[in-house]
Image: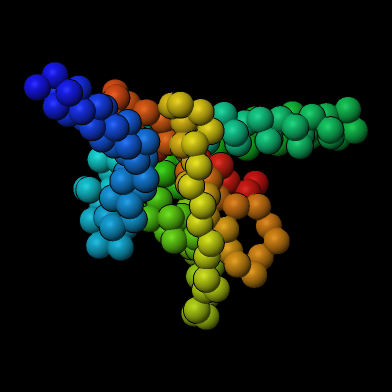
Amino acid sequence: MNKKITNAIAALLVVLVVWFYCTPYLTVNGMRSAAEEKNAAKLSGYVDFPAVKEDLRTTFNAKLSAQLGKEKGENPFAAMGEAMAAALINPIVEALVTPESLAIMMEGDKEQAQPAGNESKSSESKPGTETSMAYEGLNRFVFTVTQKNETGEAIGLVFHREGLFSWKLAALRLPI
């Protein structure tokens, strides 16, 4: 009788470990199906919008500071340009981080993932995309989308663990 109980506990532990490992893959598949169904409410359930927006603000501000930092000594209008650009970052982030734009990013269409004011959609069919998924730590998982025929950087969707078996999108890695 003891051997049966031990085997049952061991089997249960194996199932829990496999489930623990597979949960981010299940989250990404759930997001994909919500994106394909164009179900914004379901897709929103997988996203920590405040964390994603803060991550993008930080990324854009760092990129802006790096670009304008080079010109500050040479250009007297660089400081004014930096102030104006900083004021535009918040509306850009708000327009970029929506369930619809995240669905487009998961499909890998970089041109359509621009904010609403920058509509430069082409009527040509988009090339195929390649995706990959990998753990970057125990509590971080990255879903990467790249265009097959493109040498540019990939779009990365960074998930963070919430609780033991749940994951939420918490950051974006954009090719900027």
